[in-house]
Length: 271
Image (cartoon, rainbow, N blue to C red; front, side):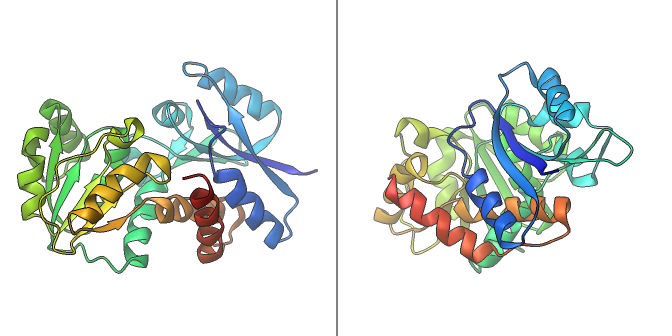
C-alpha cells in the first residue's frame, strides 16, 4: 500500500513541500506520496486523528500548528522540546508520534551552504515570533554573539528565557543601529508579506538573510542589496529542513542541490 506523508497547515496550498518531497520519492523509487493537507486553525487534534485513520506515517507541520503538534506527540526530540514546537512528526511503530524540529538544523545547513561563519560573530536577529525560535537556538548553539530586535521587547525576553540562551534585547526602533554593528543580520519579521521594508545602514557586503523567499522576501532583499548588503533568502533553509525530515522518515538524506534548483525556478517564475 502506498504510504502517506504530507504537510499540514492553514493555509497550505502555497507550500513547495509537495514539489520537493515527491521529487525525492520518485528519485528513490519509494512507494509513497506526499500531499498538502489543509487543517484549519484550532482543529489540529481532530485533523491528526483523521490522518492517523488514513495511516499517515510522517508529517511536516507548518503554521499555525507547530506548538499543537508537540503537545499531542507521544515523545519529542531534545531540539523540539527546547524550541517548544515541532515541524516534523514521525509515526511510531507502537502508535503515537515522535515530534521533531528540523528547522534549526535546516537553518544551520543553509548557512553552511552559503559559507557564512557564525561562531564569535555579532549577529542581529530581527523578530521574536515563532519563526525566530529555531533560528535563535541555532545561532546560540553556533556561539554567535546575539542581539534580538523586536517591536515588543517582552516577547523577545520570553523567547530568550524559554530557550535559555544569552542575547541582548532591543526595541525595533534600534534595528538600524544594531544592524550597523552586526556582522550578519537574520530577518524573521513578516514585514515583507505586506511589502514593507526597513531602513538599512550601509551594508559593506555583509550578509542580510531573510528566512522568507519569493514575493514576501523580494522587497526587503532588494532594499538590502541597494544598501550594499549581500542578500540571501530562505529557500535553502526550506529545502534543508525538508531533507532532514525526509531522512527521519525514510533513512535517506536526499539531494538538496537539485531540489533547490527546482524550487528556485518555480519561485523565480512567480516573482
